[in-house]
Image 1 (cartoon, rainbow, N blue to C red):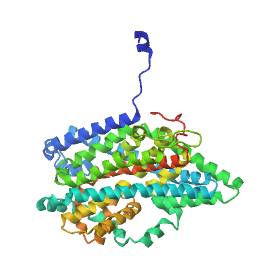
Image 2: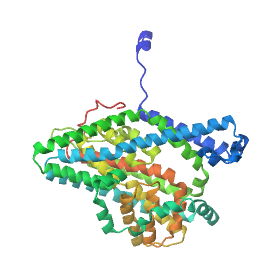
Image 3: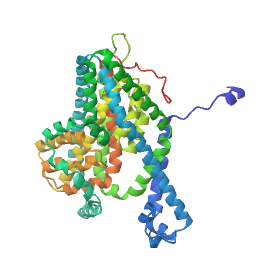
Image 4: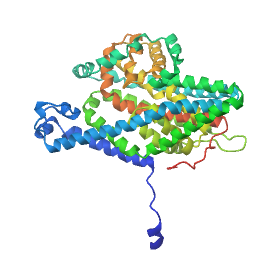
Length: 481
């Protein structure tokens, strides 16, 4: 290459997922450094004797002599918290309307209700296949590793004392979980007030309502349905454009989200529960790097009637989904990540938009492979911890209830952990052990969210391949393909 061409060639842009990964690593390293070296003595040397009140902005006489540098540290903390929360709010603002409008358009666009039935059956079928495989992985791992047998009693009691009181309110707010039944689960799927469901962000109810509205549009004359479909389609496209704008802030937001998590958690709590964490993370890795590639290989290795390959390779899948996976890891929210997941499936993985708009929102609500594995291992871990001997039949009961709990978990922080009350009570394990899970849940929540998001994309690719429509979507809108 000549010197002239080297000067005039424009520099290559750094891919979005690379930027997010750099921000993730930088935030984690800063968090570890702050956790190790920024102690209460550090605050005292800066004139702050009540760090919690000072960071919260609460006036306190003991902090009256806080130095200018302490003020700078507080400002940085508050700014990072603000940026992270604004980014998540932006994604959550997008999540509910994109589910509503995209599913309405997808269902109504199918035209023939029999086509909806076929697509729905394929989607639910692949969801069932992946979650059953995830539960098998969970049961094997938890019985082989036996994570609940390696925690000293004094460490267990210390963690219980540390976390039980701080999470008592959260446990009380989800007492509805204690009376969960199959009948209530089914009735709860259909809302009596769709506007209330939209306002509260009840995802399962929003999905059901959207499917029913879309189905209704297929049953009326096309002339009447077309304007409604056009409006929903336009709104869906407008929201996707907001996603693309919001993604430009993703690296900064990821840095701001991950740093305080690592700063507050550190390595102390993780060291006490290392076997449990290993069991969960190994299970997640097996789903992500063994189960999903096998599913893709088995169900997409074909050609359609036109001779177009439907195959989705291992490396191609993970490269296409990397931005969504990294965002899922940092945000711990499948719903908040949904717009990015859909864009990755459409623009990067080349799944047709109508299939993505049907499968991914539905998967965000009911396809929870990572959460089901997490619930199953966690309940059996606590049974081992408290010396409750579970039979194989009882372990199967735990696995089945874990799937239901994963689907019905409310949109609250650590909700899937709190909903663990249901399988714990079903097999007679003390629910106080939930506090132990909460001690390390933040990191595990990140991991299971990555699995949940990836499972939705796998299902979308498999359904598209079964329809002979994989590799249809254009790459024109992709910024990182």
